[in-house]
Image 1 (cartoon, rainbow, N blue to C red):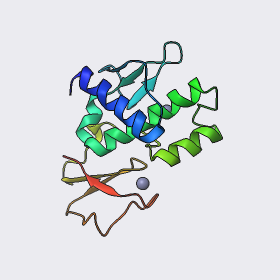
Image 2: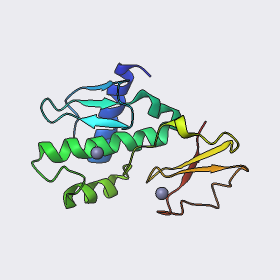
Image 3: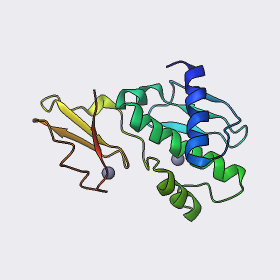
Length: 148
Ligand SMILES: [Zn+2]
Ligand SMILES: [Zn+2]
């Protein structure tokens, strides 16, 4: 995915989930290590970690929603921080991720099947495949998705 495609995706998600335009810049930043994205208070641009694309389109879209919650709330002069009630409410409303997935470095090699919860980013490693239609996240009951 290029920076232009990222920009278009963020604009699209902003309109469809928040019903408000994203009028600033979104770019990939490979220096982000542990976070999925970052919102810059000063110039309102968004940075995204390109490694997060490995978790699939759905998880990546939910990371974008998380960052857009910071963005729209800050511009509306509402509570834009993780601890704020406005933030918690909006994040739930749009279905954004609460936490970014951890990096792949701690991968248990014996367990080949890697799943991630699409709503809270909890990761699951299993020797056998899970039927994701039958099993949901044990932490939040969100849908599980297989990672590549
Ligand atoms: Zn955040
Ligand atoms: Zn979950």
